[in-house]
Length: 193
Image (cartoon, rainbow, N blue to C red; front, side, top):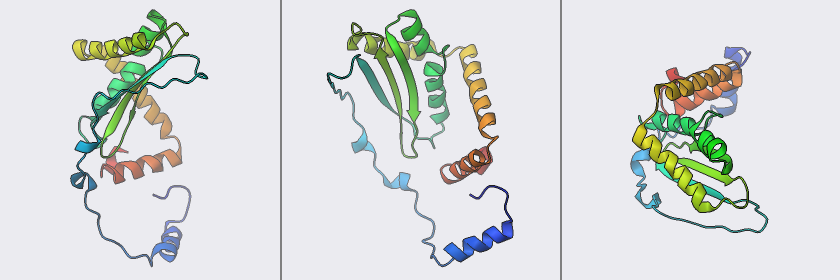
């Protein structure tokens, strides 16, 4: 993707001059169909790391979620935002404000074309906050989300924040170009950019 203030004919000529002699390998096969992800999935793995220079306990949870190309992926992205986007998010309100056990609580999606991960973490507010309390609180918020669902107000807030971020990012020509390249390459839907 080329973006900016340039002469299109001149840019195409330069691209042809620099890259025109490189032969095409044709269209690559869809890798997602060729990859068996079953061996990549691990369930119930726990690791405890203790280091003297880390003053507070922390818990990190990871869950396999649909790939960015899956129709269910936007729902996962919204869930992460409902859990941790801003001071009105569920994790902030519960762990940091109400229970006052975490100095930081976060959720985010590491999106991938062949599989994604939803991560949640909480850092204890002081040395007395144990791993069990942090894990119980994180899992409790996930259970609450699964059992009670999402309120219309939460969904509206998250939607408004996402729309605002997209609108703000589109003010930059480089962000526009990046979005166009990503939606074209990964989803084959440039109209979504």
